[in-house]
Image (cartoon, rainbow, N blue to C red; front, side, top):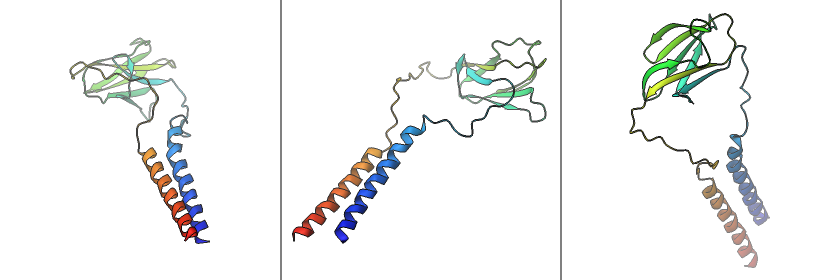
Length: 165
């Protein structure tokens, strides 16, 4: 009876580890439940005309028409652009402070708000290239699975050997 339980536990362990190591690979394809749409314009940040997470924004809680953009990257910020918007008609600049700028939307502007940080790169000018593949990073899942399979195999061999004795 102990042999059967040992084999069953080994197989359950194998199935559990296999399930745990494959589930995170699918997580990137699922949108977060926390994603909600807010009223108002679509706000995005760019660096030198390319979408970037180096530009973050925050709406003023007292006045949602005021938006503060901050450049958080490593390059030298030289200025800001708001493509598709006209200063004085769609927005005004309320303040500038270091790597931050605050604008206020005018006349009920509800179009897209794109803040483009103009940045002078401080690196050697070499931009890392994306390889274009959708492979997951190596996490050791294959090694863990192999270890579990080996353990299950050893348990089965031990049970068979004891049965023959």
